[in-house]
Length: 417
Image (tube, rainbow, N blue to C red; front, side, top):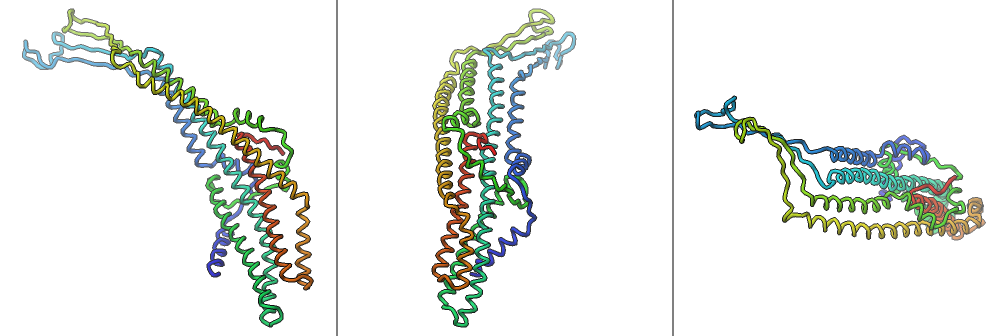
């Protein structure tokens, strides 16, 4: 019991000791886009890919060489490189054949697109995590409001029964029953507080800000998630194909492997070294100027292994793309079905006017205080009422989360206010 209250006090101090700021979801997302460290780091991958495209466009530097006389046996002199000595100069430039340079540039540009798509994919997943965390904190706060109200009422009753049981006016078993109910509610509250500490920590990480944020949600927030769907599964699947970065990455991977296959085939064509040289006295003529050409003979190495490897990767990426399509469709179907089921359950439960049970709760509480209701009936009702409130809250929470899951799997907000 002592450890329980120590942990409670610690969590209360931790939460209350920090300044709180009320933030709407839109404000959270704006801060997230500006400060999230994972997104900021991923942006550098885009800059890096652009730099590699610049590099791919550059030609190899020309090579310049010189040949200087080290020893002249006729004059027995060293480094005879004067007017009657010997020296030569040469310059060479590597010239790509077979369209290699063009293909290398195309692959580099495609890698730029990959970097951009990977950034968008990270953004898609982190955005869902942000919204899920935001709403989980909000719904836990709502549960805490209900728990605090019930704990406050039971605290008064337990204190009263402790005094009366000590005087022998009420059975001690009634006092124990109320105290057990109170402890159960406080345990639930502690679980919610601990959950929110972890959620708040994750929210701080996502927002790049160590402040404590209080989710600010409009009372009508649930309406847009409960609206009758104007879309069907097939439309969502088509939307996901158009919007999902990971699907586009899978598609671009085929293109990348096909470009690489073309490059490997182009590498069968040997490149040419073209150059010019000047020789002072060592050639057939004095001050001889020559044209130099050099090319590898493709006799043994025709890049056969790399070509077969690239062909295998191309075939594999096509199969992977088909698998990605099936996976995408399955995710859309599952998300849509989950949302439909949760909304249907909520509408059935909401038809019973659950909110009216709040007034029933206070009626039962007042009647118990007056002695019109037995303690067994009272505790049974409080347990049922508490469970009902928790289930209703979790049902609303599931509606939001499943709806946001649809937004995530299609990478577009399909629920409008």
